[in-house]
Amino acid sequence: MTSAVADGIGTPSPRRRSKLVLRNTLLGWSFILPNFIGFALITLVPVVSLFYVSLTDYNVFGKGEFIGFENFQKLVADPLFHRSFINTLYFAVLHVPLTIVVSLGLALLLNTKLRGVAFFRTAAFFPYITSIVAIALVWNLLFSPDFGPINQFLRFLGIENPPGWLTSQDWAMPAIVIISTWRDMGYYMILFLAGLQTVPRELYEAARVDGANALQRFWNVTLPGIRPTMFLVTVLLTIASLKIFDLIIVLSPGGTQAPNQATVVLSQFIYQKGFIESKFGYASAGAVALFLVCIIATVVQFLINKKRSA
Image 1 (tube, rainbow, N blue to C red):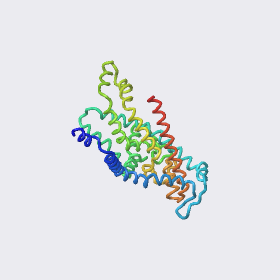
Image 2: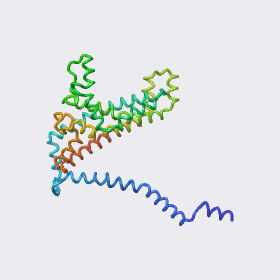
Image 3: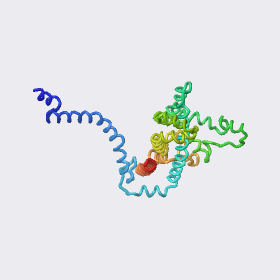
């Protein structure tokens, strides 16, 4: 009798087991289905539609006709697309390494037991949640060629002709890189801080016992320990840099014409063609090009990381 009871409690019948599996399956789907539906409606369907629209001459005034790869052929011959593509790469090449260095430096500095470290971490993160319009207003005043405090300081140091910053064709993009780095460093500092917490303290103690100085401990203990975080930050930062839009659109209100197209990027080109010139098919072709650039950059980073981890 004892065995029968045990069988009844410990090994449910096949019918009861199938009900339990069905119940757990429905419970699991009830958790993920709302998120999946939202992803499908807001992201998946528009992305799939984007590829079809890029093959049409669709605009807001009429029905789009299928024209094959004609939009992509126009992109290849479009000087504005060339300019925006080069500027996008220019921004990413400057912004990604500069932001990594600054945010990692901040994380290392604020990973110590300083008095008031929580306040400094909050202060460093604050620019990331500040309004883009407020950031643009403040930095426009700071970068003012004639009356801005930055150029006043440069003149104090003896530089007679300081840069024109946002009004200069040569300095507009570096100025935006500086502003974007200042805004983003707090967010990536948090990610690096999380990565630094995972590095075992025993490794640092062992390195000190072996006579390693601070630079050697950073190179041989810290960097290998935060490699997964570094990879995540690099991927996120590269994609965000390639899709930069909001900061440039508020700092360069002249759009693709100011200053002399020195700051026009791919996202701004897509916005100009789609929402100002109503060429949605052509703008979609530009969006597909930006999508492919992001995919290629991400795949290359995954391959490099896999090779280093092997």
